[in-house]
Amino acid sequence: MDQHRISTYIESLIFVSTNPMSLKELTSAINEYLNTSMKADEIQSHIDALTEKYLADDFSFEVKKISGGYTFMTKGAYHEINGQVLKKQSKKKLTRTALETISIVAYKQPITKGEIEAIRGVSADYAIQKLMEKELIEISGRSEALGKPLLYSTSDKFMNHFGLNSIEDLPKLKELKLEDYGEVGGERAPAVSEEE
Image (cartoon, rainbow, N blue to C red):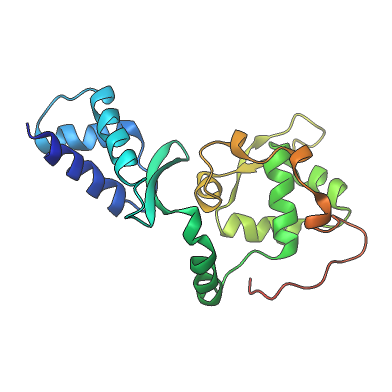
């Protein structure tokens, strides 16, 4: 089997997939389509070669592992220009309230609505509803507390949206300079222009 051909098939699968493709998915797809019995470590070596290939300065994008799978993403050097265009094109940004809420969920998950509200000091109904609609958080069970309230956790879409491979990739709280993000609670920060 032509090794270059296998790499190009893997490359095309990563490129066309709307979600990051796991090693297991890539291995299964290649074996099924090419009627082979390649092992996962063989497919991984092709992925590693592709990752190395796209590190070259000739490319503005790279193969990244996020959410337990592989996807193409633009390199950091191009984020600013891409961000300018995407900011203009985006019509559904997260509000400051939604960002506060999803941050609490990300760092404290699994967490109940009551616990979110206790941290924020205000109702979280609307923010939770919007985050659920955008599929950034999901119901992950029920608490053992009185009334067995629902527990919320971040979703795979959250990982994709924020470019994380695992929840451990979130910045540590001690690394964050809170003055860069404004106060949570207390006086309301200036409004951010966005649509829900």
